Image (cartoon, rainbow, N blue to C red; front, side, top):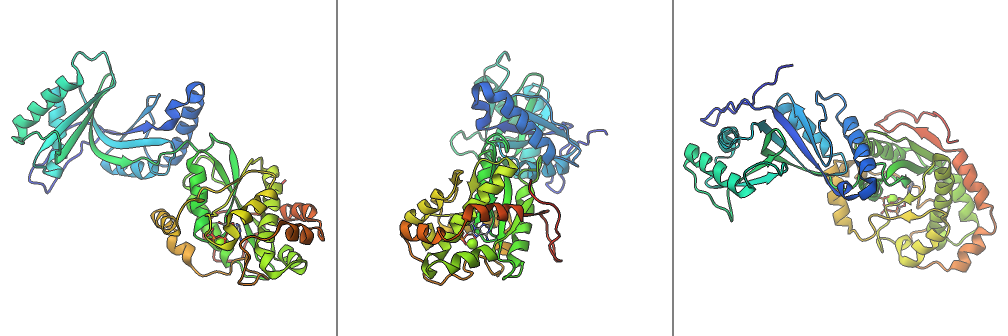
Length: 417
Ligand code: ATP
Ligand code: MG
């Protein structure tokens, strides 16, 4: 398909720079990975390709800068919104590509000037082709002068109203017209796999996202209060998992649902009311580990935040850790609720997460939970049950459900291992 040239209308100055539109993305931390760098970049490229499925765009070049030529700015916007969901990129920008010539660059830059109508400007050049005969500073001066001849605007190096960024690569110059926030982090899949405990509430989806951000592939595990509670929380978690899978497009994960009501009832029969949430959490950890083993995952993730509720104090979290064979990762440990809510809002799932639903946790547990349940009491209660056996039973009963929005009954699909 022929490349359409971008056009600005309604600005009083229509601009036809006849320059192909590209999205330029820069790899973040993954580019620092020494001998593993190649592997990280391969995974990132795969993730990017999966995220771009259905968009008419090819990923070009390699190394720590990827160039994605697109047909027009509309396509660039689509690519940009997909890139915001690919962990591993530090920055991205929509650029116009042209010859490495100051006059051409100034022509092409007029698009940005026509849109922004700045009162002053500065040119910042980055020379990635170190063999180019002019220095970055020489080029900045040349391009600046060429722009002044066209616009008569003053150069302001300290607080320019428009900062024109230009990258000089082998073969082409890239004139930035719009910056896109990079998602940061490491490519999903470069840190292994974890099972994330997804309650359907506010914290756990954000925790799952942060785990992905540091390169973990995430499978979801939800404990439902069946047969005592209706599946509202489960359907919420399912919808959240769908949104989260947008960040691991190369390998969208399933959600596993473990009916937990009966195990909670058994634990409540042998324990004091104010100890129960910690006992449930310890058992969730055991079931989580049993399932993780079957799924080849090597950590659990939870949405705990230090001191948020009585089950998340240091003594109680330590007790939960003691029941877990695998490391329990708590990405939100130091986050305030307000910060978590802001992140959930930016993900577009806050209102979904806030919908009322009966959470499995309070089932059979009183309102008052101890902030430091004595270890002896936990062990005494647990000694009356075979919890490892029950953990296997829990993992056996895990139903695999597809993330998504479902209004009907949950379908039974398949079991783990
Ligand atoms: P959330 O919004 O994640 O529910 P919360 O503040 O309500 O957070 P708790 O209910 O105390 O927190 O749960 C702490 C963590 O334990 C959750 O973030 C989640 O990771 C896990 N968890 C709790 N209940 C469930 C559940 N029913 N299924 C799966 N995980 C759960
Ligand atoms: Mg909860």
